Image (tube, rainbow, N blue to C red):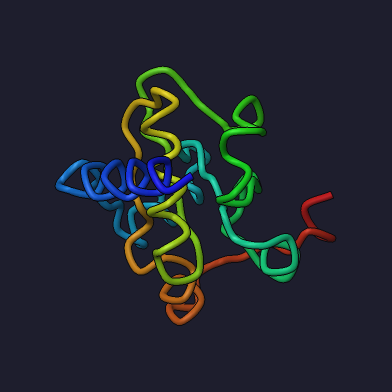
Length: 129
């Protein structure tokens, strides 16, 4: 078990060394508004997602990336945008996605905290249904 933990930490460290870029909030908001958003993945808890999320985001909690990888949105030639509330869970999800062989993964700059602070559009789980 300790070997797996050490390996996981090494992989996380490697995956975070310059491998992930960011997409600016205004850029993502504009792409959503014009109907051409990239695939977006919200890796927060179910309650956080239900309360508010980036429009069009698919919800797969960070700890379920492996078991629910078939639900993760992808589109050829498009990076996947991943976010959580502040960043750590998105980093863990990004490491898992990297291990699964995902292509380009971008973090939402400032994550959901900054998105909401900027007053950018959100959906709730009730409105998305």
